[in-house]
Image 1 (cartoon, helix red, strand yellow):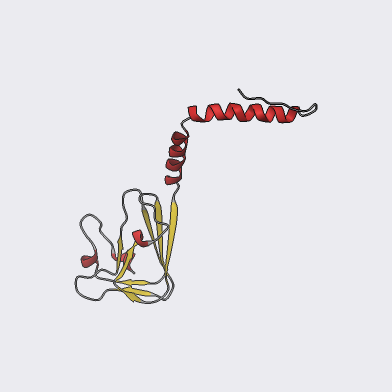
Image 2 (tube, one colour):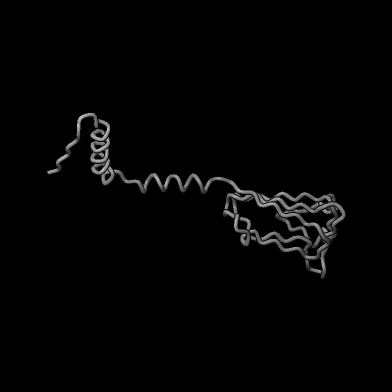
Length: 137
């Protein structure tokens, strides 16, 4: 048995004690983990953006998005911007100028080319993802 004694004028303390007792009995009855799981699922759906700026000439550029801490599989927008005056080119006969790895369904890639991409479209294209000469210049 719990004895709660209060001096006159301490009704607020009585209400607080009653509230604490009610909460003490209700918490074990509520499965908070379900609410936590729903909140985590909502957070997973929030998209993130990874911005990559290429500001110096480079050959055979490889970008692995999974190496970025902000990468969230299926919820990432990757923006690659080649700055003005910068050339991205290939070295070797079978090489491609830009190789972006790690993207999966739901991710997106935007390439902003303010510089120059030098490559042979036949070596870069594939039947599934054709690249036109206009995109490369």
